[in-house]
Length: 330
Image: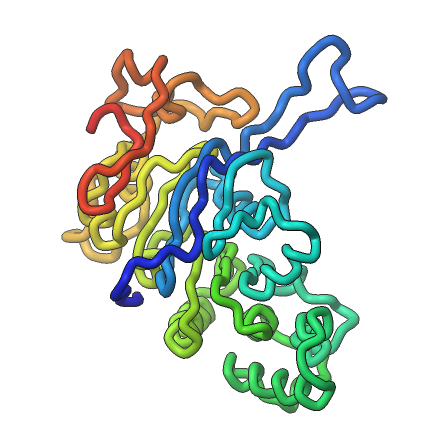
């Protein structure tokens, strides 16, 4: 984990929403009715500070990957503000966005699907340099070789194709491509979940080494709590499109406050009995984001719910020392 001397914001996210319309019928609409929407991300607020690793965790379908892609406008948000170094990238023109994306990159979950199968490794890594017209051909070739060495790949492999590499090697290629333009922010969307456990450790260590070497800031999206505990400085917990808790990693794992966070942490496997938490079993099915519950979205599964929880939505706010929480119980 990175020690952050000064908490200087790099990206500030306010009231971020992403709704996906459900279109039906020949004309892709419901006659006489409003088009239903899936509220994948609904009014999310958080800040990413320079030099830190902020992790987003939660169950599958909670909206964490949609959040990450919305920040780069790979998916166009429905509403909200995304300030990168003080400028709202949601208001950028296509040219302004292209320039801003030199500072923001992403490493995808699937290291094979994210690489063009008909391009060599050298062509894949050099592609951002070509798009942004950085350097001469000779300088680009030198940059590609330097990046390959940085991520632990032999330059002798530069003319090979993605199918000739293992999963871990392919992910290293994706990381090298993300670093080609010297970005300030890298969004890591479940970057090790498709890899073998032994390879996961190598790639995680690589991420940490690169962060120190290039002064990178990470938004690390994952469902693996052991990985998150190892790499992150702060953790944000999402449930059904909402952020329910944000805290420093050590504090969140040692003293979670939100009932959902407690249940999530209690479900993780532990080697030593002394580290185990009392298991909290959640009743009922995960609600659909097409029709989320009123009030607190977790109240239908919460073992500590009150009458207030069903009618009044809690607002995430500071609890203590940067620990933020959205719960009526606290």
